[in-house]
Amino acid sequence: MALLLHQRGHLILHASAVARNHQVFVFLGEAGLGKSTLAAALCARGFSFVADDIVAIRFDTEHGPLVLPALPRLKLEAESVAALGEDIADLPQLHPYVTKRALPVFSNLSNEPLPLRRLYRLAYAQQMEIAPLPTHAAMLHLIEHSYIGRLSGQLLYPQQQIHFRQCVEIANRIPMADLKRSWALELLPALIQMVDEDSRDL
Image (cartoon, helix red, strand yellow):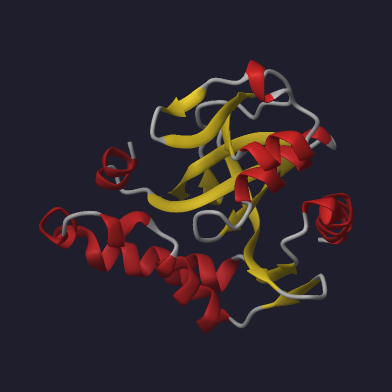
């Protein structure tokens, strides 16, 4: 799916996305950093689900970067399922060799492309904080967390310059911040509160 979307000119990020007031907030990070857990917790707080794992961004000349809605499903580890109050016995395993479970999303769904408002890069720290990033750092993180590096260079070659320009455009137009927090899942409510307040202030 990532390859097909990339070939159609979209920027594809390894991320999760939720929406509030018809604006999208995207969470970037390596596998295991809690993107899906954070998205699930925000949806439980009233945000709309947009996408998980693969976030596709379309560039619209009139409306700017638009995030496309995706399959309404979150991929969660057992610890995250428990922290969210779900019964792991009710959730199917994604694959016999994968421990993650599939959590379907039935409500608060975004079903149309929505404008991208903010990007957060997940990072670990002892103290929770949201630290704005400069444009050049944001661009490098967009490149790092896009799917382009996972695909064949031969397939990507005709669009490498387009991909670079897309990252530059988003870095110049959309604010990005480091979202710093600890490993402890018991601090998830405080993290959600911090993100909730930050998104309201934008």
